[in-house]
Length: 133
Image (cartoon, rainbow, N blue to C red; front, side, top):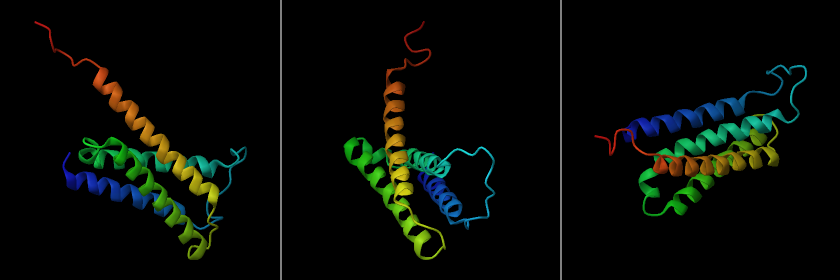
């Protein structure tokens, strides 16, 4: 995948997150039997996906220094989540919550761990057809 497509995918996902977080409170109907704190799960999974997408974008940076790339992705996701919480509190007539930011950061960390695990799994998996005659 070329750089432009990767960048477009990341910008699109960041836009999806912003739009979902900017929805005015009370416009989404509460469902019966809803999971308590379900919005924290939503934040977690939104930022887990963002982390995975950013790791794909920072792959060239990760080759010489994987720890730096992981830290960069987690910091970017956390900063973006923090910016959204500040905007919600100041301009979007919503409450910015520390627990939402914590869920964002946890999702970024989980996405980074998943990306590492996937990379290790792919390296250990034998290639099809290699060594067969």
